[in-house]
Image (tube, rainbow, N blue to C red):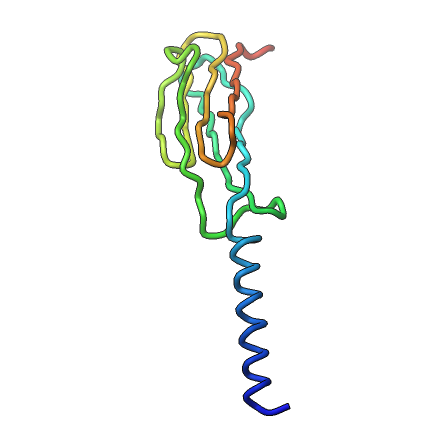
Length: 125
């Protein structure tokens, strides 16, 4: 094999690997929603952070990508205050009422919007 053939084969292999990496690792296929902590307390200082992470085909976070989502407070939105809202993060602060807050997350990666519920409960003991 000549030098030209070796360089050609190497460049074709590198091109195929870069295309596969882009399609499998760098592309968002689905999203994962995490909320920390799971519940809020009606004390006026309790804060919950809702994060949306884009996942690739292997189930890991897609590097260099953040999913663009829209957060909609659909039920009991008067029981929380929005502290900060970004393209993939929402921070809520509880007011002084109990109940549950329903958040609908619209995105282009799932067919139906994602619905999460965050309960606002009084602490026991």
